[in-house]
Image: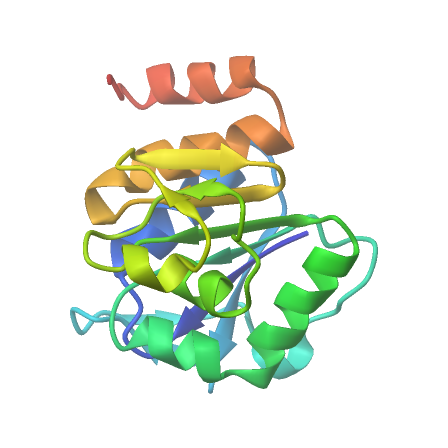
Length: 181
């Protein structure tokens, strides 16, 4: 199971692109509404989440959580007790934790990126606390995957597919969608 958290003001492309790519790759993904079932993105697009944050199950079936960026979505993710519990569970149980754009700042605030390499939206580097910030579309370090911003959503999503399946599956998916680097 993969949970993609949607908080009011999330960056739509950073949430929907990973959901789409992961589902195309045969992964089980649920969007999780933080604060309700219908969540409006930062560009006014309402998205109906599959479940609410109250319905998540933190157990062995969980493989990954994904935190899209956007403002004020990132702030709402950082303030959510459910998101904090999911991050702590994944950290304790060696599960994948992925965040893009401003959302790596949520992980930085918890000290989870200290000593690691990561990327984020330009201007958020100082919030990564002890991390080596790299200006790359997607960065994987251990079980953490970070993405730079909206324009890097496809690279980020394909990195998620790659770690949950394999590089060949990610490459076939990219080719089938006519995605060229």
